[in-house]
Amino acid sequence: MADSVQTAAFVGGELRTLSGGETSREAALALPLSRLVAKMVRIPSANRDDPVAFAAPVLQALSPYPDEPLTVSCEAAGETADGCTAIAAALPESSADDIASALDAAKLNVTRIDALAFGILRRLWKDIGAGRAGRRLLAVGETDDVALI
Image (tube, rainbow, N blue to C red):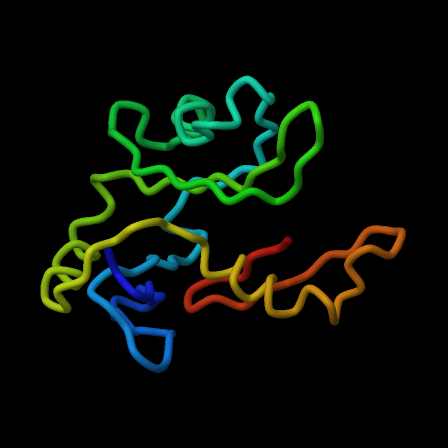
């Protein structure tokens, strides 16, 4: 088991590690939203133990590649007695050949997939007034496009 998991971002056709300090060969892979299928999913308490199994068919229905297997990851965003809300992200296998080559060259093993924009959102969360009433629209610049959250 790894001591620490680093974050690697695949942006503009290049793989960059975002974590500093001592790292392992395991990495969370952060990708632009243009490479992922992502959705907020409400997971009932009966499915809380395996959120990926619950979210996978939801994301498969949204995928532009309906016959392609998806690599799915979930991150809890909130919990109640009835279940939890998770951010689910999926990478279609057919769109990952260039990513796989870069990961092989860097000798990294991906443990989870994340959206690069969500990492930026987490970093800015306290500054954008999370917890205050009202709605906000955040534009996150990515290499080739802009994500609106």
